[in-house]
Length: 82
Image (cartoon, rainbow, N blue to C red; front, side):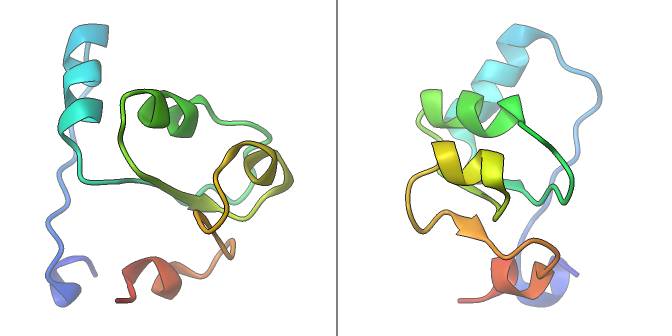
């Protein structure tokens, strides 16, 4: 699906903390499309590293994420739009 819209997705194996921090600093965006997470650390950790975040519109995320960064849960097409 990503290649259909010209997006490169890289999946990494288990990483140590230093490597993970490096990825957070170099990533263009963190997409966190969780549909049932009560609270997820990855969005907060990414924002702390200066990485923009798009996440699901869930109550826990709405409390923490900047306005406009929460997308309708389950609507993958919104994340791929222009």
